[in-house]
Structure formats: C-alpha cells, structure tokens
Figure 1 (cartoon, rainbow, N blue to C red):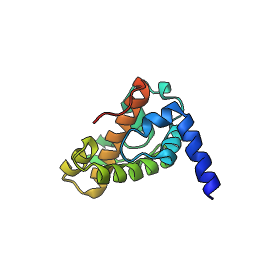
Figure 2: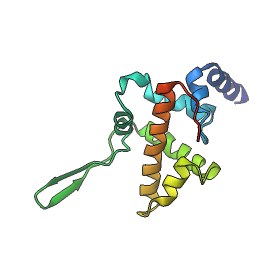
Figure 3: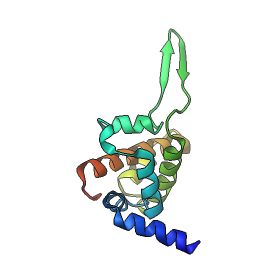
Length: 137
C-alpha cells in the first residue's frame, strides 16, 4: 500500500498543475490529482461559474407562477465529493482564511454553508489553474 501512495505522491510532484493546487490549504497530493482528473482541461470552461455548475455546486431553482422547484444536484458526484472533503480540511486549517471566513458567515445551516464554501473553493481552483499562479491568501 505504501508503494501505491508513494507512486501517487511522485506523480503529483511531477505535475505542475497538481503543485499549483497543493498551494491551496487543505489540498494534498491525492486530492489535487483527483480534482485534476475530474476537471480535465481547465480551458474548456469559459469562466469559473461554468466549472461550479459542472460540479453541481450552483443552486438550481425554477419557478412557475406560485410554485418553486429546487432541482436535484447534477454534475460530477466525484468532484462534488472531493471538494466537500477539501473544504472541510481548508476550514480546519485556516478558519480565518478566504474559504473559512465565507463558511462561518453563512447563516443557513452547515450543509448550505459547506456547499457555498465548496463553490468558493472551486472558483479559487479555477483561477489558480487558469492563471498558473500559486494560491495566495
């Protein structure tokens, strides 16, 4: 098992994009490679909102007359899962950081705060990859 972990770590250290993602608090070598494999080429998304929507982290509401429908989450289940895990780690590591402050300001419950903070973190991921610049808080 250690051989596999070491191989994954070596692959992450050889990847420029993975190193950029690992500059974000809470993202390790495994989660960086996982995010990259789910996103693919970042240039296929015209902006960060398209990536957030692809991950299923954008709120979906439709209304007709007096009826309001809140749609189910669509998008990559795996990307959404890893982002929630990374968001928890980020909030624990930097509670006063960009994502931590955003998480703790939400007043509508833990789940909604987590989804909103995950979307915020994914926007950061987008710009780190798009600009090829390490994260700076």
